[in-house]
Length: 280
Image (cartoon, rainbow, N blue to C red):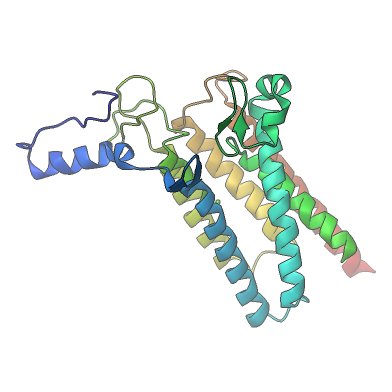
């Protein structure tokens, strides 16, 4: 398969083979740029963040209206959302820098906060490199800082053709333009978007009124996401500059282990706190 963008397969193939070829070469037809004006461009990846924020706000506002147990109004929710969004963006960026590419950014510190690559001249790249685990820590920090006063990203990765999976012969495998070689690879971005986004959301949403003690939703999310992401990481290509960090575990899997343990510990602490309050 040519890296110039040509697609394997001929017009005489059977319908099933044509369908398989269409799926396998789909990344070659994906344009990561939504709008481009001169040297400035808006990518689908950024749009996915806006979509995710909008859906989160809509679902949270609906719960406020329908469930009396929440002592928040719409103004408080808006302020809390803004604090969490800022926390997510800052945490995701610095999490990527710290966990995945610290050596490079120590040598190019301005690129941490500037949407330019300045290694060989100034080139607009946008903010390239966001870590979910860092974003999660940022969201929690943003919420805690605010309260002291009072997953669409993967679809964007898929459109960008980044964070592709490992080589596979699985029928769902795809050819990615930016991947080395010409082998089929797991569309691990889609696996993550489906299982960590849709499936996990359905499970947690169905349990939102049943999980105890108070605050257990966060603990359940940490454990659920950590478990799903840990196993999906076996289909995802490790970062080239990191490889396997410890034995056969990637950096993402190590962070997921910490996430699962944190969720379990939080659940235990919340349970003990509730029992203590009930005993008083």
